[in-house]
Length: 164
View 1 (cartoon, rainbow, N blue to C red):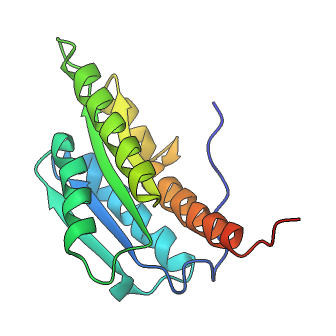
View 2 (view 1 turned 180 degrees about the vertical axis):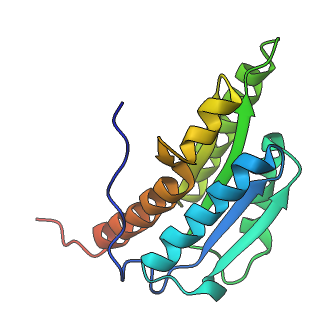
């Protein structure tokens, strides 16, 4: 299975402000995701005081947390990132939750024309989640932070391109 392996260059995040909403449900998974995201931000040249985090009780609350940060943080962040984990259970609740979260975040991101990185693990088992939170499948927190940094950079560069 391919994994994202394009870490952001060491100066890409130098002037970026990124806000991260982190679910505290399944904390054994989300803590390593948050650590990976923070490390990726700092390794890309980000300044610690330009990284804002908001804890959320669960994944369901991630979209409203991003919306609240967008409304209240000044200056507004250049990007947002959500980190969380939903594990399949005996019912289909995971499908409903994941679909609603992803739809809300995608719509919000497009509406505000600002990247919202998705570090939401949607796994069948806790073992799968742990493998993606710093285990044998990498750290999806780090990968999603690198991706959102690269997207901000691409948008910024696009804005400075002179049409031919």
